[in-house]
Length: 129
Length: 129
DNA sequence: TGTATCGTACGAAAAACATCGTACCTTTAG
DNA sequence: CTAAAGGTACGATGTTTTTCGTACGATACA
Image 1 (cartoon, protein in one colour):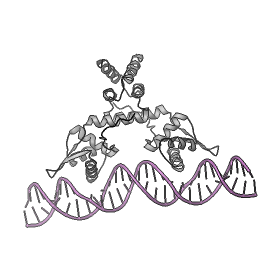
Image 2 (cartoon, helix red, strand yellow; image 1 turned 45 degrees about the vertical axis):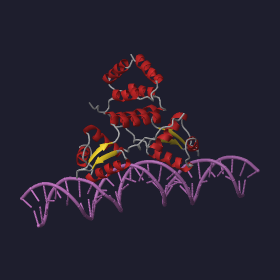
Image 3 (cartoon, each protein chain N blue to C red; image 1 turned 180 degrees about the horizontal axis):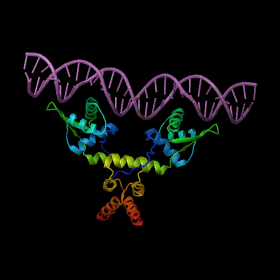
Image 4 (spheres, rainbow over the protein chains, first blue to last red; image 1 turned 90 degrees about the horizontal axis):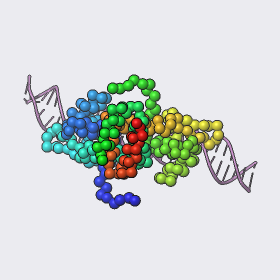
């Protein structure tokens, strides 16, 4: 049963695009210079590469930008949460046929998910009632 | 706190590769013909395309194959669980800075995660003690 | 005022992925 | 024996994503 709804969905961000989004989510609206510097804390990347990516992101409508200054300021169009929910949804559908509980099981079985995390999750569920 | 461990990790499968893996996971070791037929239940794809993908997968060491017959049989090297755990791990790290509980919250907040799913998850956690 | 610095624009090359056509070998049925 | 059916190999091509060089306009300041 496919519900009819406005195809609001923006195109799925690519890997490189996600890197940029994450900087913007963490630090808020930023210039290319700022984002590029942040990226370079993790890996080497040329300024113009980042610039181009952000321009593409803007073309796609994933970012909007304030051009009133010479140093353009880029801003994510969708909130962090919304985008992540979308990505998560896709992930669950692809790998777990949409079953969130199956994903959970994996998460809980993973040694890398610490006891503390598990406690946190339980508390969360309790609070949900 | 990053634990030191052998970097066992195989290269991340691409989208097309994942499709193939999923068929193999669901139906067990298979021929190219079989996999291709399954894929074609969902979308049109040429036999040789699938063949090529599976050959690449084998080159990468993600699949191994039994060549003793003319119809080669392809088998995933890693178990479904292990690969999924790896992908999930990467996903959590990338989008949620490794916080499983944060991911959970999103999952639980998502209307698409049904009440039944949530019940399932709770039962799961209870059983964990 | 001129030159170094910092910005954007944009085409093009490089790299990663995906698809397919063609060659050619085996098996099978008549 | 031979033709059709079905298999693998693999290069070529198409597409998308990523990276970068170069051109050129603004700004800053010696």
